[in-house]
Image (cartoon, rainbow, N blue to C red; front, side, top):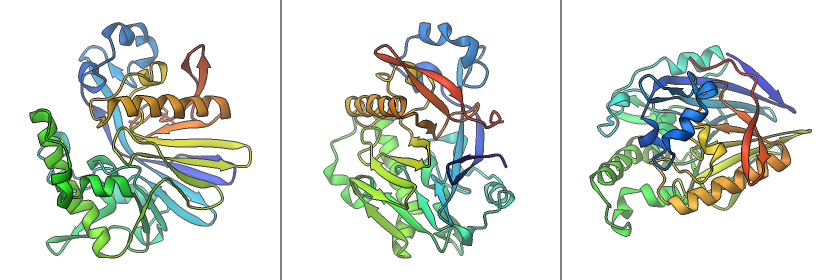
Length: 309
């Protein structure tokens, strides 16, 4: 497994799945086709397949070794999940745990699990199947879960939400309740969950901060060690075109106006402080430096990981 070192923190990339996902018009519906064509020279083939007009992405977990502890940032889709709303990941089976093992991480070694938000592809390996039910995959870990997302996705609070706007949103909401039951509720039953809000410091190098919009409890994880800086942004970004145009949301954002404002704020800080921006789903080299480009932003150097495959 490849890794980079930021200050005293080792960052290891574990790719669970890589492949074609939605069309640009579906994934980032506000982005014009001209934007993709104008940047085809570097978007293709790592982020966009122009022949099939399909975005390319990854589902991945970031392993951080910090202060003598092992921290996982997001836990992917997981195996054996009932995901009728996402056919490509319905009852997915991968060798994710073997990939963790090759990086020197056994489930019992994990000290902290960070769920940047509660979506199916960020919490799946929170648990694994056992004896007809679900148990924590990482039995010794503290699972850090944003309180706002926990309340929003808890099926017991469904009556608090506004009615779905369309059939797509209805299916997404129902899918979210399934995800909560198999990937979040078991963590609570075992007493491994810690709900946080506002900000939560993990150690001297790592701090979680609220970054709402994509979901009510979406968060980013900031790394500051020595002179190095990084920010793990979860689903704040699904495609590099959103760095160039942060006003463009993905189709999965619960509150589009808030998501766009949060994206711009986080990118501005990253550009000003020299933070490496580490999204959850970028293929290619997985992460990038961001620079100001007038009122917008541009991509500087890519991270030192080989392109995902």
